[in-house]
Amino acid sequence: MKIIVGFGNPGTQYNFTRHNVGFLALDFYAKIHKLDWQEKPKFNALVAKDGDRLLVKTKTFYNEVGQSTRAIMDFYKLTPQDFLAVCDDFSLEFGKLRFRERGSAGGNNGLKSMINHFGTDNFPRYRIGTANDALRSRIGDTDFVLGKFTDHERGQLPQILKQTEEFISHYE
Picture 1 (cartoon, rainbow, N blue to C red):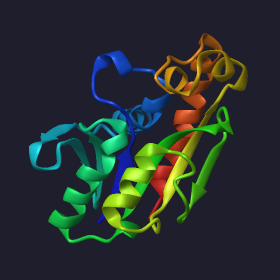
Picture 2 (picture 1 turned 30 degrees about the vertical axis):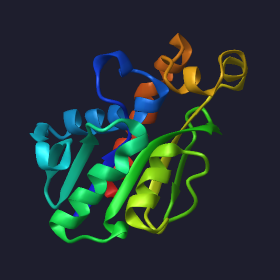
Picture 3 (picture 1 turned 60 degrees about the vertical axis):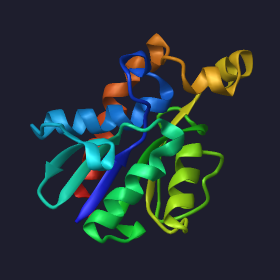
Picture 4 (picture 1 turned 30 degrees about the horizontal axis):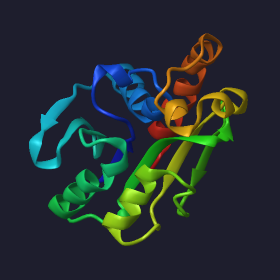
C-alpha cells in the first residue's frame, strides 16, 4: 500500500493558495481518475482510494500533517517509505517539480511535522515549485504561502497539475 499525502490547509479560504498546491494536485488526480473523497475521522483526513493507494488530504493544518500521517502509518502498519509527501516549495522555481527519496525538511513545516512524527526523514517527497521572489520579498513568507497564485501562475497550473498527476500515476 502507498499513501500519497497532499499538503494543505482545510477551509475554502485557502483554495488556490501556494500552501494548498498539494491538495490541488490530489484533487486534480482524483478528478482525472474519477475518485471520491471520504471523511475519515480516525485519521483526521479526507481519503480517496485508488487501487492499492490512498490519497490523503489531512484536516489538520499544514504544520501538523504529521499527526494524520502517523495515525495512518500506525493503523495500516506501514513504514515512512510507504508515504509520498506532495507539497509546495517556495525556494524552488515556479512550476519546477522535484522528487527526492528522502531528505531534510528544507524549511517546510509540513515536512518537519512528518519527520517529527515518523522519527526519520527517510520518506519520499515531491515538491512543486511556487517561487515568486519579487512578490515574496514585498509581502513576507507567511502572507506569500497563504496567498493566492497570480493570474499568470494560475494559467500555468493545469500543466503543472497534469505533470504531477502523471508522476503519481506511475509512482510505485
